[in-house]
Amino acid sequence: MKSYIVRRLLLMIPMLVGASLLIFVVFAMTPGDFVDTNPKLTPERAQELRTLYGLDKPVLERYFIWLGNLLTGNLGYSMQYQEPVSDLLSKFIWNSFMIALVSMILTWTIALVVGVFSAVKQYSWFDGLVTLSVFAAMSFPSFFLGLLMIKVFAVDLAWFPVGGITNTGSQTVGWARVWEVAHHMILPVTVLTLLSVGSLTRYFRTNMLEVIRRDFIRTARAKGLKERVVLFKHALRNALLPAITLLGFELPGLFAGAIITEKIFHWPGAGYIYFGALSVRDYPVLMGFTMFLALLTVIGNLLADLLYGVADPRIRLK
Image 1: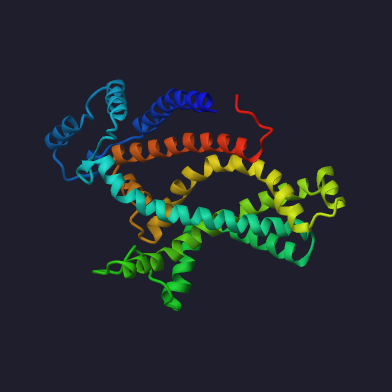
Image 2: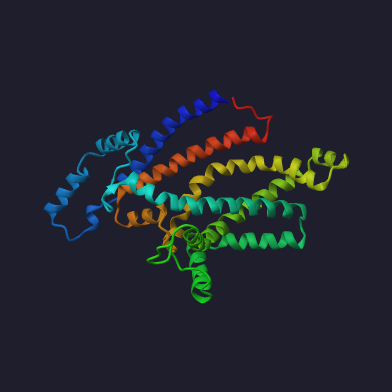
């Protein structure tokens, strides 16, 4: 196991270098830059700023400068916020992590429970209701669902705040602040959960339907084991194996998928500043956050491979 982890960690290096090259090329090919977004600048001042930010250098030279900075943990300097990208992300990434973690826990818990019972009660009214709800949730785009939540629950019913992470001018501390932040989290977390839980529920349902028809499940029932033991100890463990693959995409997917949601709810997370940087072509912020997502993707795939061995002892990591 240790040698496998070491090999995978070493393999991450060329993968991340390749990802950095692809990310840089995509943004380098994008027309315009941060200086172009300010039409009030004189040509002399614009050229001065391009020289200051290194935008006048050849593309290949700029890439190796950026790659060299990456290897030292330097993600660049934000032209919009006038501070290092690493410092900027460190201030906002934890806000994104809060709603991403809560959303992932709720999504997997709901999908697991509902998917299992939907498979056990196949073609029942419960299964039909789940199928209808799943496709209804999957059909709504994130911006429409977010605006609908704000209209109904924040404006009409006034149950939750419209947006932000705390109330304007709030000075709360301790548990009062925790409750205030949690109250503001409810709507964005609900949107992220509804957008993700549908496809995962169908995935668990399909896997469970395949597993509960296998011979070892019939054998377990023939031995007189309780149905609860058969389902959650024998069937569910085998049904989880294909779902583990999705874990590699869940980590970056939650952060990337929250970009629009954070913008709608004015949640001060990494996705919110990413959206703002996109409008002014602040490429260091865009490339730094995209590189962070690439790192999460590689780490997520490594965790998925390790969990395969934990979930199924028959799988040997070689």
